[in-house]
Length: 354
Image (cartoon, rainbow, N blue to C red; front, side, top):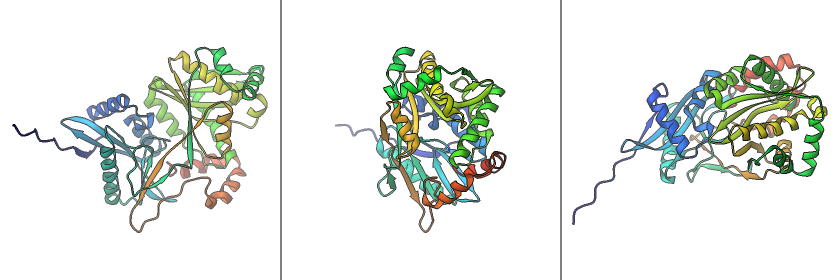
């Protein structure tokens, strides 16, 4: 009986993201294996252009075929320890692999890379997390559901109480606009910056939003809801594999009166279906938060997210959880800052909050 063919070794290597062929191969792997927008190399590249945080990634190959991919952002900030994050500024993007053992080896390689690059920790947002790593499944949940077959059915699919709020908004004299031009970008950033200031969170640099819009092209846009030419609510949405994901969104204080947030998300659902999407991903929220309750009110069921972390021996992992007790007094102070001050200081701080 002939001896079996030897199994080809699986090689793990650091990817050159400036090589267009490598980027195209990884992008195909992500699409074919159900990866998220945050697994795509163009996301990493946009984050690097928009924040200055270095984009990198580890890939596993066997017989010339990609079998595993781990996108990474090297995050550094004067305020927090250095870390490798998979995937930077994303809510998912952990190891994507054909097999669990391949995913685990990618994580081990990331830990080795972290040591070489003087990073205190590796953070994984989803994926197969190795045993021995710190794993949390109780901190965040995601909200995702199918889209209805038409606008009326979409409205009826929303629970009665929330549906009533949408109808109140639809009775207002509101203008809904989709686009990617300068007006939409300026309007979105102004609304988003005010919204996160009101929540006590530093705003990301506008350069990050511009870089993501430019990188994703037609797979990203901005929706702005206005009244009397004054933007009330705005959201930047990613479209990926038939899924619409409103990602960076918010509203000014007056949005509560006009219900422009309710109109915004309902119109986005209708538009996403017209674009050919079949799923609406409302994104993640902190368990027990107001955003968590808000998404449940829309009829979305929470799906717990598993996040993992490895910390180098003797090092301290960074803590960027805004709900941590260590930040409660800082959040209260941030809410009181004038918008001009928070918009100036926020991007400096937020670059380290990937």
